[in-house]
Image (cartoon, rainbow, N blue to C red; front, side):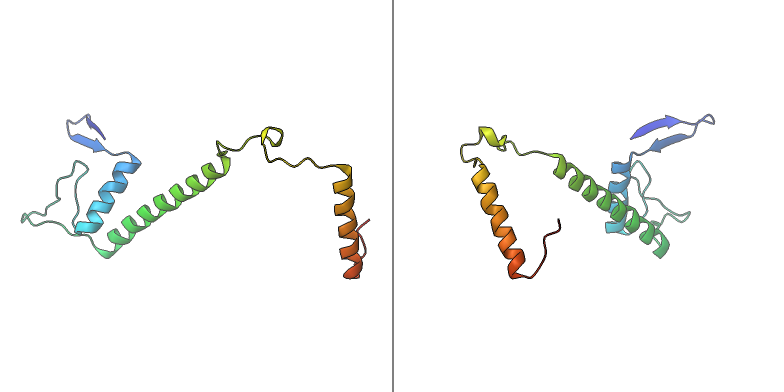
Length: 123
């Protein structure tokens, strides 16, 4: 939250996106408009000003967009993280060392599967 004064002396309060989201969530729960510094907005008669349908839908869309953005960020960062327990294959105790015989056996199994399915190899 940033507080300051305009050139004409009027005090203003600016919110960052997370504070704006918290303000909108509070307004959606209560159904009443609030100022950026948390006071309830009132009309000339002193009654609290409620949210109309357009304002409710705007606030709901803003909160939903922030949630989608957070989920996308989490999904991107989850893919980049590497497990602390994962080590290179040569340093793992259970690492299988492939030999030429293993590769030949796998190749032979694939050729037999292609023949059984009447498929020709792609080469």
